[in-house]
Length: 535
Image 1 (cartoon, rainbow, N blue to C red):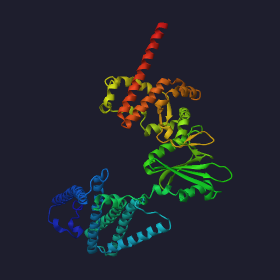
Image 2: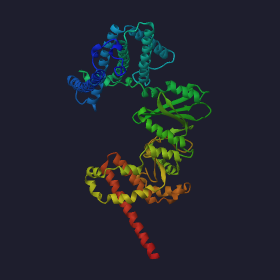
Image 3: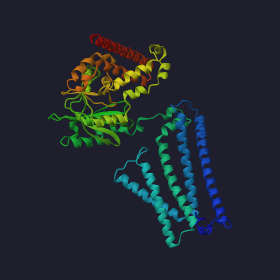
Image 4: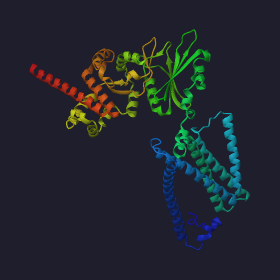
């Protein structure tokens, strides 16, 4: 561009290599240089990946480790890349600032002043605003990006000031120096980010790369510094004390009984806060999710927000983030207790009956349809050849050639059926009992499926009575044939077993489903014949 605009290399007061050449030839040479540099960059990128992979393999061989944990070789490659990138960025930064010291030394002073100002700013944020910094701080990547952008803008202002004062080096040297300075700032953030990743994964990296036995590198409890710290020693948690002050301003901390129950491998916490004052009052149930359960939290909150007070669910008060973890707060009725499994088994039929009465609003139904795959969609995605091959001797129970024709008749009938709110495995869900009716405290993995979905196969006899009783309150259930609802229950159980890779069990359920459907079809034919005779 400089050559084409007539500036020539003389404009830059340096690099007179192309002087004397025709302008078009200069453009061709410069274009060739640019293409060559990009080609070299691409080759070096491939070489870098190759060296990282070989280096990680060599490091594992030297440590004499085998089968440390699943996918440990991929993990080793990723960690080794962090180390190599950190070293390469450090080397580049040192060389860049050495060159700047020779060609544009005042930029070094600019960097020192900027670094000192950054240090003071971070110190103020840590001391005054109580900003927390650890290896998992989510704000650090944003800080890195802002830091080098602001630093480069200040360097440009510094260079412009030198130009006004007449102390700026020649234009090309200044241009290249600013590029070096910018990349130096970027590389410093690369070092910080990779160093953070190395520190975060230090224990597992030691398990792979260290020549010491892995007994020296066991993961200790104190390294789990996030979710577990929020739910251990629950009486002393400051975040919980703040919620209690908001909800119970007249009660002292000693007047509140706080209990925490961890479920789902420690990823979900149920925290109950019950007032111990003379005046009986409702308490709080706080449900806190780890980040790997964020999707479940959003689904549950969406359902509870739309729930009617007559539904057998806990009453939602508010949802919020607690230290960036999803959570919601519900009412804990006075005198409530957690029900044991035997008690949940006893009340499960009544809860299933109440679920039949739950009629979701249209916006929540659309939310489910847009976010989850329904029962029929999941069944349509079954790989029948795969199921036949892996179901063993049970495969002989199914006429696989005639299966598509049967499903083409069955699935449209099910699709036209009314829908219900379904919750699988009611007897394993956290449920509270109180003076009022029992309330389900875990409504994750809910679905809006055809009537009969999630109904246990050993309770199908109860389905007739349940539909008859609930049809009095929900009119659309009058049209539901109990036998079709039982077919839905079998189809739901089939898909559940298939999803869990219990292929033999899935085929057993499918066989019973097809036999049941064949009986219904034969009865329908007999009815049609009877109607013809009567006519």
